Image 1 (cartoon, helix red, strand yellow):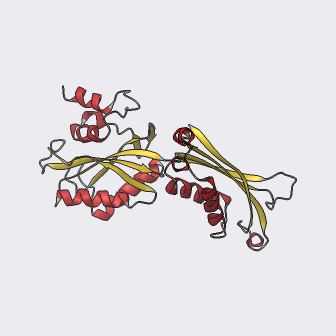
Image 2 (image 1 turned 90 degrees about the horizontal axis):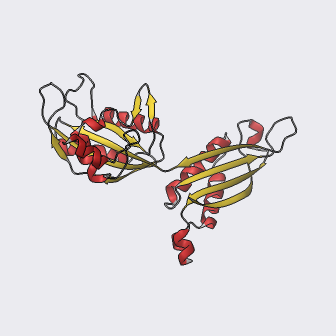
Image 3 (image 1 turned 180 degrees about the horizontal axis):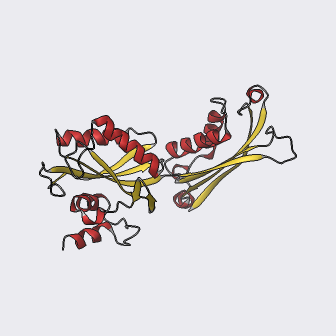
Length: 271
């Protein structure tokens, strides 16, 4: 991946947790390392295919003076989020905030915080079998698309499927989504659980009827094993109601554990 650098933008400001740091000005230095592709811009000598580092510098300055941050961690986070949200060609950003006049009674060059952030691609399975099924899915999609720093980029067809398990209940309407998000897997999970609660889901019977069900299937090529979260979803390869819609929007995405594409996993399941 190619990179664009902006080194040591210097500003004087009032960032810090101590009272005196709110009125005694200090020097700060901010550097950016932005991963992108410069090939089209380089071959065509055309700024439209690159990221204007002058505009980026202006945005850094605007954020720096937008408020008095207690922590340089928060300043770095705000800058990283702004760049990834505003500049679509930037895939990853490293923000280094140096504070050479930090209130430390020792000899030192500077203290600094480095934040490394990137765009993440996630795939979700969504389903419902209570109430107005199509409206439930559309409502969930809209709520997901309205999450901070998250955008729904692909939506599969809605697929009617028979319920999984032995409990007698109505058929489901299922779909899969592709997301671009700046959230971590855990942050995304908590956001989805909140959407389920807000829409009125009540967890009573395992494999039972549900007003809405939102599951993370894949997150980049990450493998996550936590008490409350497993990625890839442990049962996704066994469920046609997942693989059928997922293969519509991500046929060539590779399952990080099975080492097979989604379309291949679908063919294996349907044999």
